[in-house]
Length: 407
Image 1 (spheres, rainbow, N blue to C red):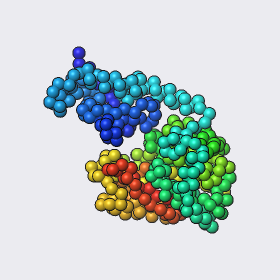
Image 2: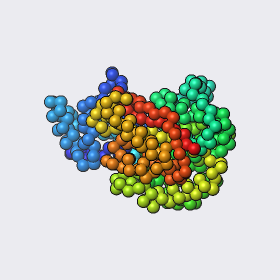
Image 3: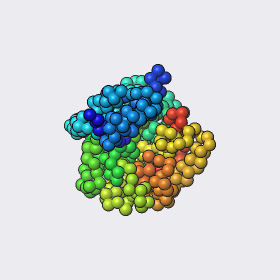
Image 4: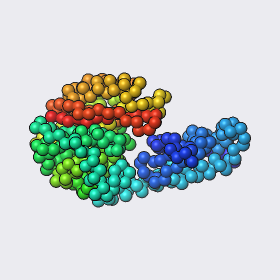
């Protein structure tokens, strides 16, 4: 009897296998509901589009048979389905069970454990200290400016270390003394968060360099004054790197004698879809109001850090072109990036949004939400670009990012 194929989950990471002896399509779960990384052979990868909740095994079998010119047994397709289902890659009860379990585990945890130690950076304190010292060597640049915040990348530190160093190198001398002991408001991109929502957690953040305590007074203030805008104990905090990487660099520069207010900024999908300012959404406006009020009430005790990347261009990100950093089309991307950054530095949130909204942000700036949130919370802030870079995250795709300081 012909069987209907379940739907493949949305939001999975898929890219060509980098292992020559194992060609195919790599599939991994960015939410980490499933810990298994799968490599689907090329022929079977061509049948994944039939896992849509409507097509059947026979539909997929006929398609693959035409592709290879010989019969593909139905039990091969069924075996693929079983592997996907068992590992939580399909919209089935197995996935829902994994999801419930992971969310419950994070909610019950007393601390937010490092999710990227051992992959994004070393997981041992001594080795991490040495690596960060190497990154920052020659970049310490004390300034007498009354810096109120920094923006740094959230790309993997080994790819963006020069921009990380340009940003965090400013936390030396008088600027270090100015930031020490304050509450650092860390606005991070929520790559997997709910649109028009902001993720909070009361959990201390653990890294190989120690534990950072949250400023519970400020967390509670936002929770009380932005009801409906916040995802409490947002599971995305457990997997997100945009705040974790900032914590590591902050600890390297400031130790652990400060508190953090970690805020994940979800995408402003409605704004980009309708071309309306993000604050036209009631939930976003409510959070902007609360964050702005908090900024005014506690101005002297706050330091701001934004974990942001900019453009995402190339085949990995759905573009047809093969992107090379600082070449061809990426030179035009640099010009557009600079136009947007100029508006950010000038504190012009409206003009910034006007540059972002065409084609629902064709450059796919994943730092748009944190930047726009900061500009609305601290409208008097003015920025200076410290460094701009483009980096080939793979041979066909480029991410751009920057380091900035705000006064």
